[in-house]
Length: 64
Length: 133
Image (cartoon, rainbow over all chains, first blue to last red; front, side):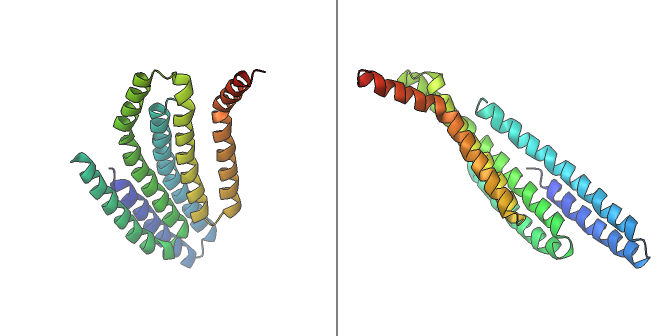
């Protein structure tokens, strides 16, 4: 099992939240929002790939 | 003993994921949901991989009984639909989207019924033949 994916997501979350705090404190709210969105897109890409793997596995096993 | 190791891995993964979820939830609830999502997908992948020998046994039974594959295929497909629908419904419920969860549930139910429709119509035809009309 690729347990590193979970740590990767948690790390992205923590980094994004730190960046968010720093950017918000320095008065760059738009950039903070963009950073959050970019981090979320990265995480979603990882999840979507894994979900696609699951769907492909179910498709082959159950002969859809 | 491969399945015991699998169980240990699943339990460890779920516990690690629960701790990470609790840690990240306060800072960023969206990432916490992502962690729980990927963890459940990974656990499900490892569980579904174990289905291969079970399905091989099922095919063996099917060959022995001489049943047509067209009769057993809807059963397997319905199981797959139920599995994936349950996963999606749980995601939506975790995210607090009850209406989304309900719609996925209803669509999964309809899809399962649609898949099982050929079987139901065959049963109906058989009943008509038995009743002579």
